[in-house]
Image (cartoon, rainbow, N blue to C red):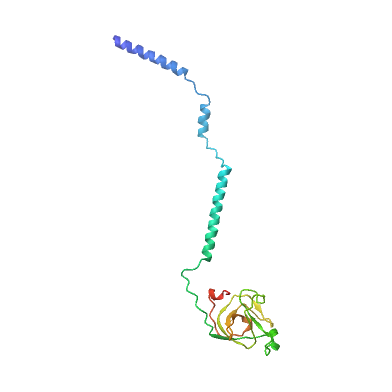
Length: 197
């Protein structure tokens, strides 16, 4: 073995000794194993602060208000494709009928029958009067509403039918079905006609 080989062996042995000494001096930092175990555990839930919760509540309320406003607008918006309202044609004759026999020949206020402004309101309500008619009057009808307020006449007959009529004097109103004995077929009123004016 030559001098170079001996020198290399000595250097290697010296390095081994130094590495062993350095390895013995290295100590595990305190808390290292606890930190490693904690990193393997599932993360804890973070608590949402009160300010963030308030922000979410305000955002949710704003979305709710916008939704309600948009829905309301959609329900009451004017229909762009709705056909224009056509004037009602009063071309079907109907005759007024009073169930009270003693009133039939009289044209007094006590024997007058009411034409209503609104077929869906209470018939006898103070603000629901469009005009007066009497037994035997001939009126012109335009259409009929079949689901108006139920009215009962003096003989006990009831009906939810209401006729949109015009008197010879030009007064328009709604005649309850119990106030006529109509036998002529009439068309159903459109939504625009059925609304009180």
